[in-house]
Length: 330
Image (cartoon, rainbow, N blue to C red; front, side, top):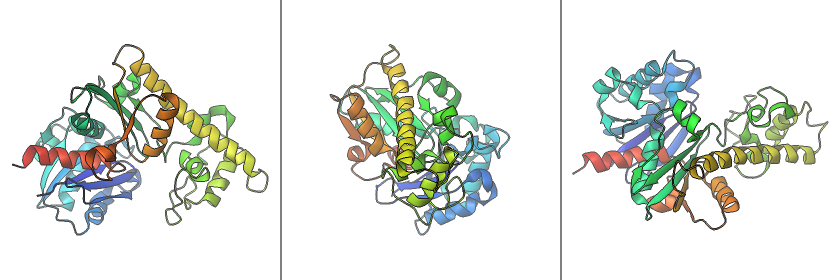
């Protein structure tokens, strides 16, 4: 009996089944349409039997909610609204499960717990004693140390993890370029890092996806226009070489943020230098390139290689589905 895992973020809804057969995601800006969440979850699951659902979330941080607790409760209630007959289990930062009643009464442990689910699966599958999972999604990058099959991260919420370097607030889609490049560019939300990835050929075009910073499609042509605006120009005033330099600089700065966080964690004495490096998420290919460049002697293992299925992009959903199956199935 396969479990369905749901990872409910602020910008994307992700699904995977514990048997690894199904894996999908939908863009959904929760902060713009919080009351439409239940309907979109039904769309996401489609014809799959919504009998046993394992849920994790990060969408509670959206600024449409007055507090994390309110956000968690809204997400829990929306899942129940979408699937009134389902058996619901919610993953917590304490690496255990809550049912719906427990989650509504004590919501904070559910907040932003997907990283520890992915880390737990990576730790269980790792062949060495010590290791690190690096998961880069659309918005953030998680650096999760583990040892002897257990996650050993010191942080337990976004605030503490940011302070420790275990959470780096940059991903492959939503990071504004002005955050990465500061005063070198316009302090306007004209473009995101995804435009740099698309321009450089590191991410595919999505002509039907109108989630660019200007509300238009994710194509190389539109990415060029958005990148030009970051330099106070437009398509007619800036050559391709200038666009390429900007995109390259943005990607280099993103890599520097992540590299500094890794150095801070594993060269400061807080954690042992990992024997295994596991990468996951939508940014898995770029993380692999960076790690091999920064540390040529280490072995980099794609998350999908560990689990025997291509679920890396939706790793959080797969992780809670597999953990629920391990916990609740005979």
